[in-house]
Length: 100
Image (cartoon, rainbow, N blue to C red; front, side, top):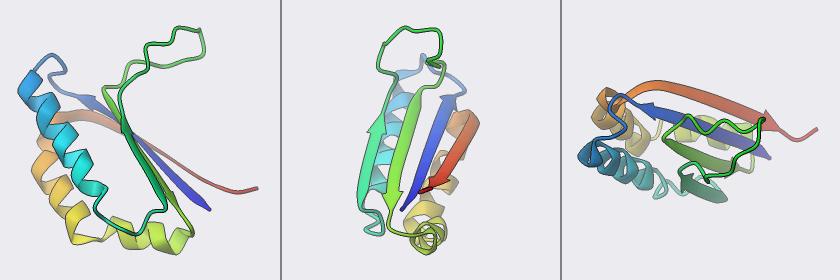
């Protein structure tokens, strides 16, 4: 199993149109059928010292293998997402993990 978790910080997080654009772009990634589970989300509003809620959106994808995740990275829909949405974010952090 390969987990790909991406966090996005918008340049203008108070801009409703830009939030909608990034949300739609992230939703478009769910059409790539290489993943076995997917979730697009926003901070949950929980409040504990160890929780980082500074991001605006997250994308969590679960793949059966690293090879599937690599194929996702070069998929035309993923390329279009980066091309169409990269101007919206100021920061992106990716956490990839595999089973122990």
